[in-house]
Image (cartoon, rainbow, N blue to C red; front, side):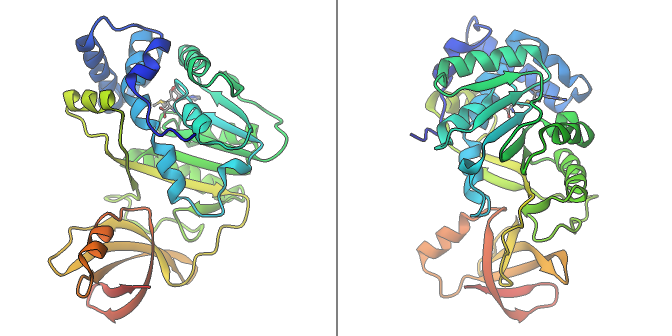
Length: 343
Ligand SMILES: C[S@@+](CC[C@H](N)C(=O)[O-])C[C@H]1O[C@@H](n2cnc3c(N)ncnc32)[C@H](O)[C@@H]1O
């Protein structure tokens, strides 16, 4: 049964460190947040301390866990997570995505979690033993090599810590058929993802999400980056924790990319990826789209008039977020954008 929420109470019995009280837990979470946001040069420090690892689990594990459920809805229809013989999660940390995989998978692939930190590995083993004992998982600091069968390699909020060159070392060891990158939706994480994208294209992978071609990203990377948004909901105790911390974890910016050795799904001429939702006007939705033109990735602005739409249609379109595919027809060329209708 798919369970897309994990409460703090679910994981608490399996944490390496027992918080003395809520206030200690909240201040420990803020301490870890500082490593991510301000002291990135010391980022390895939070993963060497049981208290900080437990704080990571309390806040980031519980709020990252629902992401995979939403991400799978965005990926091309021909990507089937159940079609792999091996799934390797690199930078598994406390096993956040191993727990999500356990809930999502209908098949029984060999699942591996790899992390550079011995303490994270210990935490992941304890959580998996407590919450997903029936699925045999191999968790350790050593990356599996010489795997047989079809393999999916995933980087889960870890590429931004290790960089593209180390990620490529993992790729060489695992020799995957597909690589799924799930990173924070920040400019820095996108920069590292683009480096990996380029190396993967050179290694004969196709970019299956979010781009329409393997050619370079057309955005002005000095000021812009391509990211998607996920809407997630959390267990009640996690929700209350995020409120006490004054942090929003319901709308999560993500950098999601999928590279596959297989031919990418061919997207029709009349479709484009929604990559930016601008502020809507009284009369129209305003978006930036990206698709293929003359063999290149190409971004362009459009307006979608609201005239003639029912309240329900407007509400539905209002909920569309970057990452989705839009099927459209151009009805008018305007000075710096196109007016479109949906098909
Ligand atoms: C932010 S945590 C993400 C944990 C988990 N995947 C998640 O999404 O919640 C990043 C993890 O990447 C791991 N990491 C960093 N560099 C690594 C490397 N070179 N090899 C393997 N793991 C690495 C860290 O130890 C840490 O556990």
